[in-house]
Length: 291
Image (cartoon, rainbow, N blue to C red; front, top):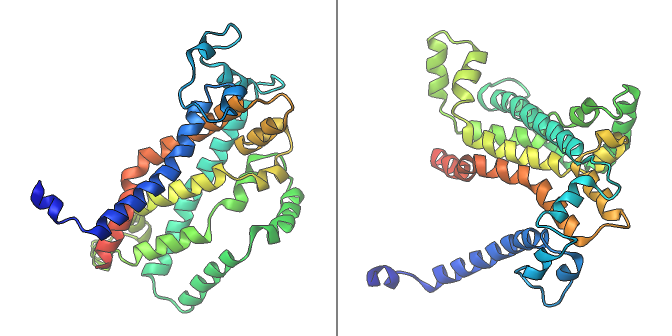
């Protein structure tokens, strides 16, 4: 033990201290959201903040342990649209995540492992689209969506985000490190290119697929701007729209708002922790192959 402690340098101590501070910045807001979701507005706004709800709060006749969560689900106008909006977000986020992984992996595989004239130009052109802000194409995209009658529909919220340039870039960079010898051996054995992609490339790309899935899901789960344009009916709105409307209502209290935020965060937490071993291991696999 003393030998181990003696090897710890000042720089390592400073690095660990810095990382712990960053961890606190990440975890404290999440902890605050969780604790505040069981409090009323008076307790939340009290200074200094009491991190442990008082017993009197839970013994009051007008409140129960789940009061804020009941308000969050019912909504301020008691329309009970929360689960429908949650379902809409799940459909959009999962659909965009799946299509992004499939299309980006196909495109990345082609750009990484096939040599053809203009390959670099195609890749540069795809990367150039990342320089265009979404706000610059939002109105033309809305006009096209409206022209095809996709307002207030799932396709209207999904089709513009079927694939991302960043996803293509991420898949290409990962597949550049994939051993070409495996692919050549499969071709010698008579496998077609699609079978090689489906049976060899995809099963051995789980780290980058998990990473891209989480990022794609999060982007659409948090997307507010585009659904505000194309989802105008209450039954087609998504969770970010529900939270925005909930916070604008006159009767909203801070405790219920924290409960809404906590409920809306659960799917993201579940997905991340389900794929975390691949997500966290992706960089290490990439570096090992690169080395």
